[in-house]
Image (cartoon, rainbow, N blue to C red; front, side, top):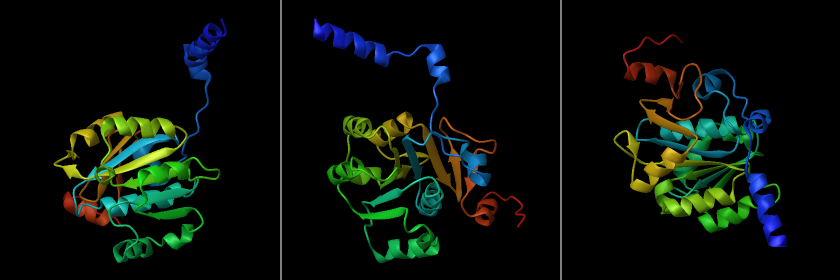
Length: 219
């Protein structure tokens, strides 16, 4: 009898009426300026994916994004590909990440099982960047399990690209599942997800982005 009652409570908890859903409040990222124009006001949890080919400004965009997210909470960057190396040090210097030292944490190629434990601790980071999805070697099923374990976090996967799409079958599935999909090309990051601002893109390096497209650049 108690099992039946518990099942009934579970079904009741999982089901939401239209009125109830419309009255729910969700925590969001109150982006401003160029960030709001590109990505609107996204929810502060869930999954994002960023992808693009080498030499188009993807790393620069991700670092700028990390710095912006530090306005809203603590950010962990799991550098699976590079780890703590001179290239990463130079990137941190270039974007003056010292300004957000108390809110930004670089993880030196931390394996996903250890990262998962870190995210379950008290005072864990609010946002985590995983660079790259390919280096995790996750299947789509493993990704779903990881996502479900950390439903209260914002998980941002960086992906290699094959043409204009994420590289690999699993990466493509993750991009389809992600609430915000960001494609980087020619120093411009395009919103292709469920959150989009009035402009729909963010210029990583405005002058170079305009130059790539033959647009006039107004400094």
